[in-house]
Length: 406
Image 1 (tube, rainbow, N blue to C red):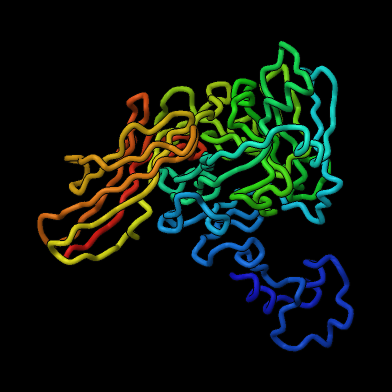
Image 2 (image 1 turned 180 degrees about the vertical axis):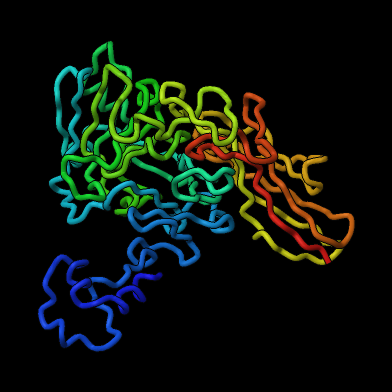
């Protein structure tokens, strides 16, 4: 039952219980009136998102794009997916914002204001691919728990910030450092101040890469609040969960970071293949690092119709975590044969790459156009769903669109 209908069918006493307050003048509420405090928020307006974006969850907010919305070479904010674990921070005072560096492997605890961070360290700008580890989860069978992402939890925006490695060198880290963990200002859904909704991280080797940023701009403007304003970590090519939003503390660890959603099965896959539905011990799960090779057809929409004898122009993007894409191919005969697309080089390391092709069809009828990318190690996307895993991560099966030729 939708919330508005639920409210209309609920007694006055129950409504007071939901709000946690006595409803003063409650007896005077007009019939079928929905209290403002119980009206559903509009995420498209709140987060400045296109109305074609798909809401998967409101507690916390999670939204994804559909394929054709991701046609831009650089993903605009209105089409960038939202993956939250807690509550979006409120009443941020950017002038008072600080970030602290601590942990067992820091030489001396140090705190910077945002302005100090911006003024002391050089600024760098990169296009960086960020993809949710669960993108494509909806295709797994048996189903995996979690947000049922289809193909839209991916984006490649332009990020501007300071290199994390420059700040770490300034702070000073010990030789025994193996991992960094981030901490942030978002609240746990319970609003318990002693609980963090998420606190993940990356190995020191990833933290020290040129493209790992403490970012304060997205596409040349202040990062939108829902995407991490005023400061976020960006670790391109790795699961988006490593790119912590609203970051206010970085811990340099002498162990693999053990923050929230670093333990158990979160953002991990079986170290060895398993049968669908099989249970896996925690110690047999491996942390997801570089994301797998993948591609997406962004033009035309699935279901496009073209006249017989006319060629179909397709385009899209391909990416492969830490690696570069070496080839993108398309098939119109369900993978029996493949033809190569024109492929561009990336704008920089960890950016997605654009491809296009002009396709002819032999006769009228129904077709599917499949895209398959190959990375610089020679690994190609599987044509169908890859190996099952308990949390539904890393689905990099070929994207496909339906075409009618008449």
